[in-house]
Image 1 (cartoon, rainbow, N blue to C red):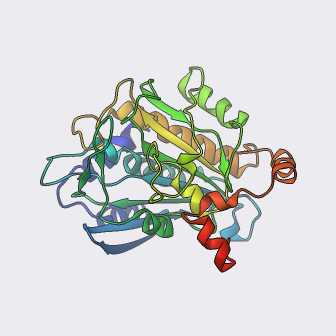
Image 2 (image 1 turned 60 degrees about the horizontal axis):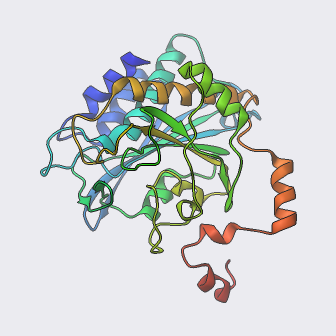
Length: 318
């Protein structure tokens, strides 16, 4: 997929890039449905991009194959005017747009996925930054609720959330790592099928990054979060797995010159192979029977998806 990663990087690494430019490139390829919505936030604006690839046996065409969602999580592609160029935080968007270009090229070459694939992200070349330990975070023109509103859709039956996750000291491997599956407030065991795919794609042992209870709660509740990679899980009942593009040392999200195209390519290729297997009903994100047993034993934990569960209970909406 390296040619698609380079194509996407050349498109995104510019001061005036927007969602319409990406949509136009995909329209030239002619194999995807795209939608761009510009949202104005308190700190600027961004273009939310939705890319839909109908599968040959997917729900869009009346079939029964499951639908995979792939979300490119980020604050922004750039931190202009403070920083010139593509920032580390943009790797999540770069990976999923590279994935979209590859799927389009595959369809042109005669290979169509079985299930529908929905890819979402947002395009912002001039996002703000915020202080964070151990390295500064990229901020975003819009809040996390807005991101979830436009990036998480009801059609997604399982979600891969791809995000640069280099600004920490808990992932110490360069490349990418995956998370345990998160669903409705439960942190479930790591998917064996996804570890199999990761081994095949990387040729190495799988790397799993830790997820805490704090990480699966919504932003804005005063708790520490590793980053926003697991935040889609607060807005859906679908299982969510984080795909963290990582480094051995903490790297600021606002750093330029920190994008390693081969790491992005590997993460994007993992998403592609997952899309193939998931649409073919050969990749389970979690064990349904085990989750039901846990819920029977320990109850409903979906209140962890709410920013203010105590307040929600008072209104009867928890």
